[in-house]
Length: 302
DNA sequence: ACCCAGGCGGGCG
DNA sequence: CGCCCGCATGGG
Image (cartoon, rainbow, N blue to C red; front, side, top):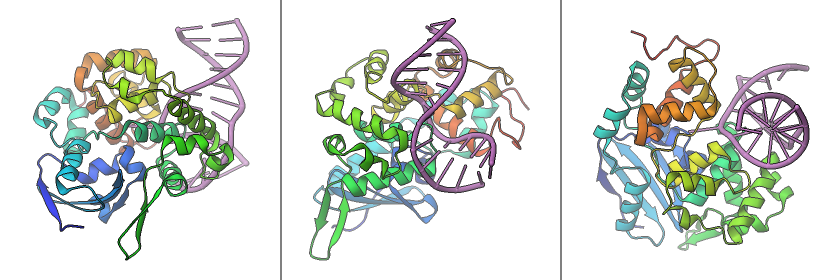
C-alpha cells in the first residue's frame, strides 16, 4: 500500500453522495459521519475521505494509484459539469432548496452487475435492510482476497456465476426473502450469456426494454441500473417516494400514473432527469414529503 | 399488534 | 393495456 494521495474537487460532497442510497451506500463501509468510506473495487480495497476541496484516497491491492484515481473520478461523477447540471434542474423552489441543501451530491456510476443486484435487492425493502443483505452476500459469496503477512483480508463483490450456483435457501439466509429467486434467476440468465456489455451501446429506450427481460427487473429497477450502472442521466426511476413527492409538489397531491410522471420528468428536466430524481428523492425523503408530520412544500410556494 | 419499506410477476377484465 | 394481489423480513 502506498501513502495517501488526493484529488482536488469542487461542488462535491462525499457525505451526501454516499449517504443517498446509491449502490455504494448498500455495500461500502461508511465512516466518520459520511466523510469517509471504504469499498472494494475489483481486487483492490479503496479508502476515501474528504476534507474541504480535497478528496484523499489510499488503497490495499494491486491497482495503481493512477487507476484508482481514474476509478474514483468515474465512480463519483467528479467530471460531471455541475454548473450546467444544476442550471438545468433548478426549475422551481422545491428543486432549488434540494440543491441548496444537498449541494455536491453526485449521481454515482457503478458496475452494471453490482447495480443490478443492489436494486433487485432494494425492491419493496428499506435501506437499512438492503445494506445488511448486500453485506451478507458479499461475505458469503464473494471471493476472499488476502494481502501481505499481516492477514489483511476482504471479500470481492460476488460474481453472478457464484450467485447462480448458490441455492435459494442460501440466499434467503442472507435475508433476501422473496427476492432470492429473482437474484438466482437473474444471475443464471447472466451466466447463460445475457450481455450487460451490449446494453452500453443501446439507446435509453432499447436498453431499458432489454434490461426488463431480466427476472426481477421492472420499470423502476431498470431505470436505476441505467442511471447508476450506465450513466444514462435521462433515466428517471420512479419509486413510492418519487411518485408521492412529484404528485405532492407538482400536482397538488393529485394521483398520477407512472407513465404520466415519466412524461412530466422528461418534459421538466430532460437529459438530466436522473439528477433531478436523486435530489427529489433524497430531499423529499429526508423532509418526509407527502407523509404525516411533514412541513408544507410545493413547487410554487414562496 | 399493525404498518411500511428506492417493486415485480402473474392473473384477470 | 391497466388494475390488483401476494410476497419475506425486520424495524418503528
